[in-house]
Length: 435
Figure 1: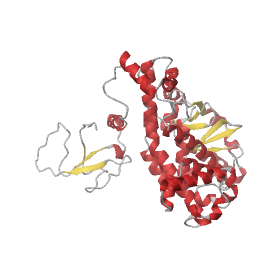
Figure 2: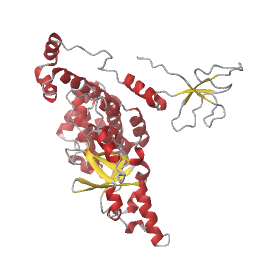
Figure 3: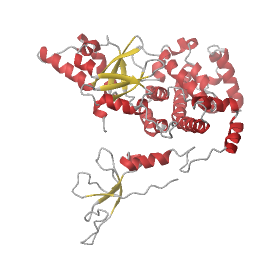
Figure 4: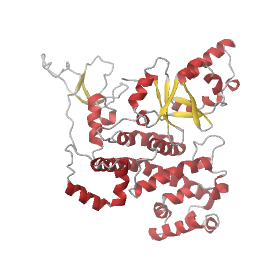
């Protein structure tokens, strides 16, 4: 693996970052203490910025969220699959051999997207491989989490050996029974764990179809405690159906270039979060999907940065009629903004600052008391300053175009909107600007 050389950062003992050996510094960026060295010489070289005796020698590394050029270098080293520092020469012989190996029908998919440019088509092929690879980790976590969640419910309903229970057979559809029998055959064992490992994502996904409505009527919240009041099997089915389609395309090495990758990544995180927020947080932290998305090539050989790749996916979708009291749950601590949708389209967005400003102003009108059930999202959106501060742009548009919009004096939030279905892919707040 490539090595990244850089000078260590020296921190004075009187700094607020001072820590004991082996502890993390109190910096928001959590610099990692590498070593403490006692300097006994009175005079020390200043060429490398050496500190006085007892100084902490700290450096920022990838797990500690490095910044600046160091972070760029480390990110470049972290996804070297299908990449090389030396450009590959696509001469006539190489192109002919590659096209024969990949097959014309498969390669034609990329060639059409490259407008006939063969070298660019291969660049897209490599990008698709990087993107598919980056999804392997979140997809694996989602699949294991899903099947373990279903296993908990099936054990409650049909016993520990549910895969052999006769009363389960009458509940399963014919397709699910066949899938279970095939899994038993592949496992060559009656041990539940081995049978579960052989069951496909299709089996677990199909368990949330309408055929199993009675099964999940009182068990959906047991499998997925994060479901809100009124949500159940249907909401899980909508998530796993799209995740399963992505999983199958990745598993069969099919193109995922035209899929809504940011939205699918968000759905994977949401599914796991409904089961276990800590697992979702761990998965999101280690996921490299966003890094892979930023490596998409173009005809000029650069990697364009899309608005979707930079947008914050921590937002909550609300309706204009939603009461403000409904925003006071645990979701408000997680999201960065509220996106209002009507008739399948984005009609507005509200930041936490705008929400707090509205509540303060209204409470002053009523001597400090306000009933949030009497106020809705529409009341906030009726404020011209709120609507003037909202902008929406296509998720696939350049992030630099979004920067221009964010620099407009009135803009407070930009919503990235998926062009295929009009749903939000993410948001960028004015407070996020670091240009």
